[in-house]
Length: 208
Image (cartoon, rainbow, N blue to C red; front, top):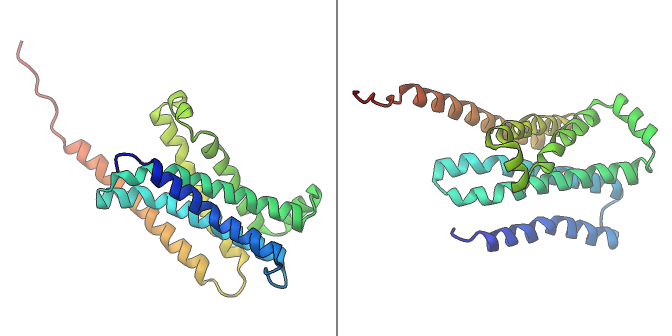
């Protein structure tokens, strides 16, 4: 893909579709008997979906050779952060009525909220440093090192979802399996890269 702008535009529009549908259903009172809980859970699910999709880009790109996929990783990650903020805002505004002390008490009482907060906090520096200017300021190595925070953020998010679900844990476990595979791939790929560097022949010394 020589010019990714159209693809980015399509992703940008489609990334907003779930929120638009949620807003439409809320307007027409089609969110069920507990609309606040439905909105909170939906935005939380969207956060995990976009976060996992962003983590899938690099493995899929390396396995298939579709390097053009790298153009969309940043936007997927930003959508994950965006829906995470909407998720937290919906909880804070509609469920806790903007009561900070109530949120603190709820966080202490229910560990799954602490994991969710942790995951979103870890995503804040990732979102802030997602621009090309920040990459140049930090330097490629430092930027990549910082963005490994996406993995503990994803672990915290999946744990948050698992602890939230009381009965049917199939969906959070599915997310956990996918995340586990992605983490295993990263470890294996890193080990293989290290071994290749060790086995690579050194530069021949030119005779004086």
